[in-house]
Image (spheres, rainbow, N blue to C red):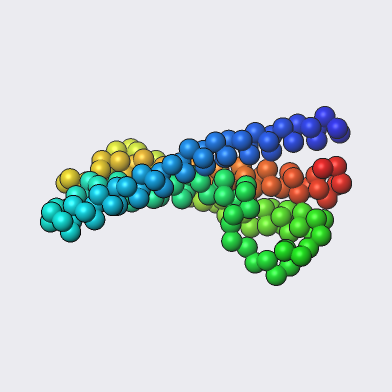
Length: 173
């Protein structure tokens, strides 16, 4: 039993490290997005120039940042939650809420989203879908791939959260 608990802890720790590494890496996109948007605004209002390519790059960067950093945000407790009960709750009550949230809400949603989005992204890859704009980015298929990737990372983090909640309820962590 102890070996199984240690294995579960190792799995949860690896999931946490994976999502932390991805989250910290894509967090730099925030700076890139701000700079690109600044360049876009300057080009438009000072020089009367617009760029569909640059506009789509900002959109892609924004989507990438939010979809790939979501699991890291969940891991660090940055997601919005109703703190009416949680804020003042005892550690066991928090663990129960975390476990129920992960098992009843997060995991079913994330796994359903993986199941529904894989064919969607697959169809996009099959035709190497590109922007509808002639000067847009030819990477719509890559953008759509972020949806199952997001839901997979969220499911993994939900699993890690459930492991930690079970350990807290068992009084072994």
